[in-house]
Amino acid sequence: PSYASESHRTRVAADEDTFAMYRGPNWTTNSCAFDAALFVFYSILADCTPLERLEIRSLNDLWPSIVDSHTEATRTMDWTLLNTIRDTLRNRMIARDPRKFSFAGSDGGELLIHMTEMATPMPDILTQCDACGQQRSKRAPNEANWVIDVGDNCNSMLDSLKYRLTSHNRRCACGGKFKLSSEILPRNVPFFAIQTAGAVRSFNATMRVYRTRYYLRGIIYLGDYHFTSRYISKSKTVYRYDGVQQQHAVLEGQFQALAGELRKLNERDAVIFIYST
Image (cartoon, rainbow, N blue to C red; front, side, top):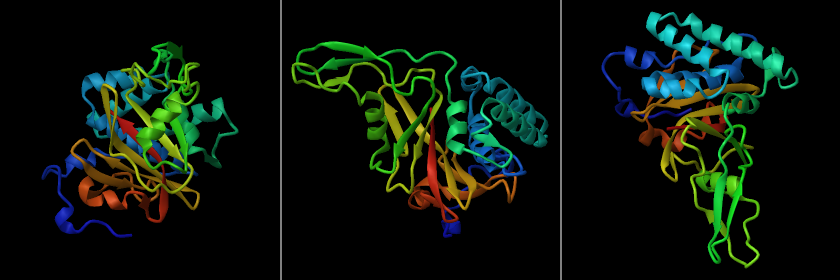
């Protein structure tokens, strides 16, 4: 695969520890679905403020142990704890749904569904007819979790996201269209994922969903029955990761220079895009 030239491999800082904090678990026995996702989430946590970490910690019952163990791993530089987090999460997922999760392999999309599931229900979405002003209140299709499946036809992921959340009852009896009159996402959604059914033609680097702006932070790739991933830091630096090869991330370069190459990683297709505030 081609990567950006050395001139584009800009360091965030001269100290190599700056990007050594971006790490994932070491691969073991078909663990790649967990490894690829956790690398992205570990990296998001490494970039988070204390308040952001608290918000993520309260998302659902999976996150307290993940956040606390990652905090301890970062404090002590004991990176074996990242493997412990993965193994604990994997055992919990196998116990929840042995059909989707096993030591023979796991469903990456299904894992993201569990990890983005909200402990508290999402508030109703308010829509209003653009002709007569009639209002309707309804639940979003993905009220329990924040994995939006857009299939293989997503020219604009933002449009797909909005359509997914507002697709039914779009016409009023008067002939007008119901349009959003409230935020699509509640403020306490720290991240969401968009899952595709195959190779995508384009993707959004940022999504402003009414009052909240979300940034592309991770991409998960699948090919030859193996998951890998990339992380895009807050400083727009891109790192790639493959748990079979190494635990630490490999710095690739700046997002602007690599944007045209991010739909694939070592011939694997991008199948999940993770956005965070």
